[in-house]
Length: 240
Length: 240
DNA sequence: AAGTGGTCTAGACCACGAA
DNA sequence: TCGTGGTCTAGACCACTTA
Image 1: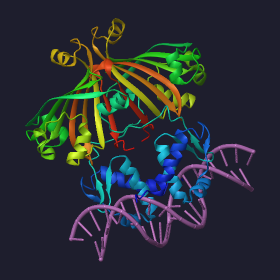
Image 2: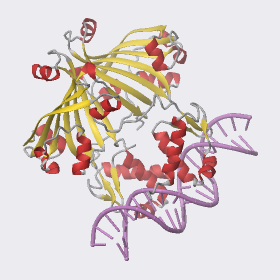
Image 3: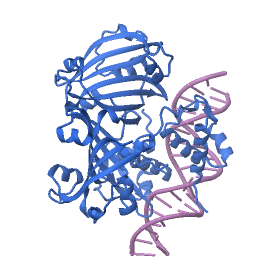
């Protein structure tokens, strides 16, 4: 028998009701005392469930008025860490990967600083090209601390979903990330690899991936501008 | 006398202690019962404060072990909604704005759909150029529903910080946003306005800003790639 | 077995908004 | 004034980790 906390049951039921439009946009959720009785739980439990919905943008709480249902279709998911491939897959593309090479090398100063290791320590570099429906989308280089992924360079894989591969094979999970995104023009090497003209506008992304507060990987991507776009959802205005 | 909730006091004190390194990275925060006595509050209050720290990436809670301090320098702020200008200011640049024009126009189909109004309804378009330390950084167009900002076109302002202007003058606050970012090459008009060569790589951003779950504005930006970069912080891996 | 965080209760009083 | 969400308490039991 699976043990499911009461607040999660309440959360799931309310969320389903909102998603399936059993409450209309702009309507008020039943008041907290009503939900207490309906679900036979305490106020604390109701509030925890509603707080979760609120943080995820399904409802907004208004003191003195009630809890209003928002239009979840426009304000879906917050910013969870996902890879480009996962994003493309969710959009319905067929994503394939060609792994060009996997090699062990010494970390440059910049890389070492981001990974918080010493300059010159061993890192594994995985270089790949990502395709969506057969068209080249991005050149990817992933740098991992060699100690954490021992033997990965001997695997003969395409690493189609690298994050999932790391979770399943090395019990490493990336639960936070910092992306830095800018634009640049394609040089001749990139142009050839991505099958675009030289000078074509590319998105250049550098991601530092963290697991439990420690840097795990650095990803460097060059993405074809007119074949991909980042969608970023933000919640809350910096108040402090 | 300002009324400050107990959980916020606890949160502020713990956060300051972590930021000022009174606890070292990797150390454990005092256990919940200890904090209860120290701050003379109930466990619920302690937990609310620690939960906030946890959501913001300052600590990680480990059942059976304790609450570990993370390195906040690497995982600073989450994704709060901020404008380009605010970001540049925080980096120490002197940000100036030249307002080219403010005009009332009819919404295109795409714009109307994003703002959830009818195609052809009146919108206000504010077009500006943003400079950092005197160098052109971005061309910005902001579209607002005309009804919400009556008379804004008659103001003779540069709207240096538009979001703050809206908060102070129209009591409109943008508390959530969806950004779509891609790359493109500068056309001749953009090149001249931004003082870059034609074909130069630009970041193209389209933002829909929301207040209380309803779309408030659409911002369209063209940003010089090598003069600006987006930094995006993400927390949590999409589990559902 | 002891200590940690995770869940939950029943009840209290406060602050805000509408009638 | 009344109903709403906001804050807070004291105490209980559970689940996980370490020793």
